[in-house]
Image (tube, rainbow, N blue to C red):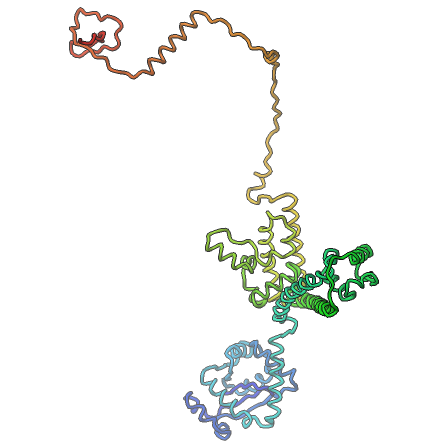
Length: 505
């Protein structure tokens, strides 16, 4: 049996001398305790050395993919086919490829793995002509080359810098806001009118740093910072200001605070540019869709770009509004429609009734951009630009024409009915010419009698029907006197209504 053993220096083919000792797998390691014992089990038959590290990298790359390079194919055709013996290999996939292409019988089993382990332990003694120092150098170079080939590491793809940068940017905004408010309030005791004239915070601090005391505004030149109209207004207000007088020490402390504000503002501008460049390098499509600030906050909230790519579109839509979501679920109210994505420019320029719809559409497209940036090898922003153009077109459609219904067939929507012109012909009514009351015509006697009969019938219907009491009288020869209300026969007797008798005294 032959053994194919791959090293960082080249291919080695060993001949097994005593196959009977290979039957016991558990005790096989004892046969490789020393180089002398190992030489009694296996013997080197052929060694094909690599010329350089590039050739070794190509060979091992092919082996890792389960392929055979040209050099190994030549060695196997030359040595193994002539020996007509089975070949033991360390990789079952490689053995299948060798058997398919070269028609050689290959063996892979736990016994072969133990044999490979024994050969590796005594490799320096089994392969003559290769120094241990050369072997170690080749192993180190090949390991670095393989790692560089497999990992494809890029320093620009480190999203940890984005998480730290956006967190620092938020902290700087809070600190800068506090410093500016303190500076305005502090200097407002000396020159309160200046805060109302200059609204920009950075310009306000630069004016303080250049002038200082209120008395110096008359001789100071502020044309580099302010327009002419504003400069004249500041100088006029300084002459008639109602602020209190302060000492030089107070002015020095205020100017030192202004210097801090200006330096922090400049550093914030530099940090924002750094964040923009880093976002365009790591997530260009996300930056095009939602902007660098919103995209960086989404990545920081998820922890990394890979974690963000695992979220669904509905999760990205409400990312950052977890408190409102759980509060709504607890109270059984409507859940929020957006979280951090609300600050995107597309959602901000939408009317309130369409914000929920646009945020849902934007979240769906943003998730595609996130996954493309996280797992794609292309670093262009073409997909993000295309999806943003589609969303802007959809936004214009919603704003201009309103939301159109998607359901329904085209024939039903295009159904047209026949036009019919309906016009009503009206005649002139002369009764409206006179506003005097008209006398009703005299009624005839017949009409009066008919009306009285109708009134009597209605009065009879309104009365409660009471069964009249009657007496039994013989039927033959009897003619009932009118008015008879009810008569009915029972055998030979009838009943009739009789006038009521006067009460007994």
